[in-house]
Every structure is written in C-alpha cells, then in structure tokens.
Length: 238
Image (tube, rainbow, N blue to C red):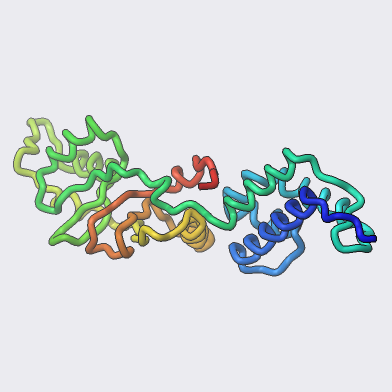
C-alpha cells in the first residue's frame, strides 16, 4: 500500500519548481538552482533579497527528495512556516509587481518655454535633482539641478542677475546628455531592473525611467523610476 501524499512536502516541491522556472526565465540561463540564485543575486535585487532563503531551500529540497523511491514519499518533512515562506517567494517571482507599483506617481515636469523661475520655485516644494522637460507634447530630456547651477556660474557677475526673462530652453542647451528612457506601464519591476543592468554593463548612465501608457516619449508621464527606487524595493506578493 502506497503512503498518502504529504501535502506540505508536495507544496514545498511545487513552489521550489515554480521558483526555478521563474529564475530560468528571468535570467535566461539554464543552471542548477543554487547557481541560478548566485548568478541572479548580482543582477536582480529580488533574488538578492531572498538569497539566504533560496539557498536554504535548495539544501532542504535535497534532503526532502533524497532517496525518494515512491510517489508521494519523502524522507523529511518541512515545517509549515517554511512552506508558507517558499510559497510567498514563489508568488513574488512568478507574478512580479508592475513597475507602477514602485514608481513615483507625483511627476514634476516642465515645458521647454517655461521660465526658469518656475523650476526654481518648484524646487522649494519638490526638491528633486532632475526634471523631465516637454516640448510640443514630447519629452526631450532631463533638466538637472546641477545644470542650473552651472549656467548660473557662467552668467552671474558682480551685478545682480535677473532670472525673470530666462527660459528653460536657454539653460537646457547646457545639457549634453539626457539619460532617460520610456517604458510602458505594463512592464514589471524585473523588466526595468534588466534595463538598468544593461546600461550598467555598458558603463552608460541612466538617471530615470519615465512610465507612460505605451512607453512613448510623446505620452504624458504616469510615474518615474530611478535606480534608487529599485534599490529600495520591498518585495511583496499581490
């Protein structure tokens, strides 16, 4: 007579396999579970966040299925809290949160023809270091606070400098690079992490990802994501 299938062990193994499949898709490599975890920890914060748990699961899984000779028979039994933990991580990896879940929803942006005073006044309320600039309903790049300071240094003298008639477009010309990309709202956190990682691998700077309806620069921003937003993610399962 065959032993009854142990639900805790079955649940653990199902979640373990879901995690392995998700890691293979996410990392686009075919390795052992432990190798996937070590490789993925250097690329995605979610893997790094669960690094210790995942390696423990690999060891526990080996113990559970070692010398398994019958369907439903396991020589070791995981604790219920362990099973709940691996199921939680499996949900995070198989159903990654939308990028909008971590994006800053209050997007402060300006128009190319706006007065620079509008930006300076806005910086008092929203002390960001960079702002998307739009011209004819299209985002044409970022204006950084440091660029405003550089422009002031080049134009100020012993007399008072009036900024009343100075427009963003005059200072915007000082921006040599515009490290901004546009991503659709249906992108996951992992998709945007991959983009930042690709820029990092090429030693290229990327300051901001602007989230729009379809990832077009001609669409209004729904949110923005910086590298810091990705670093500070608290991974949860919906």
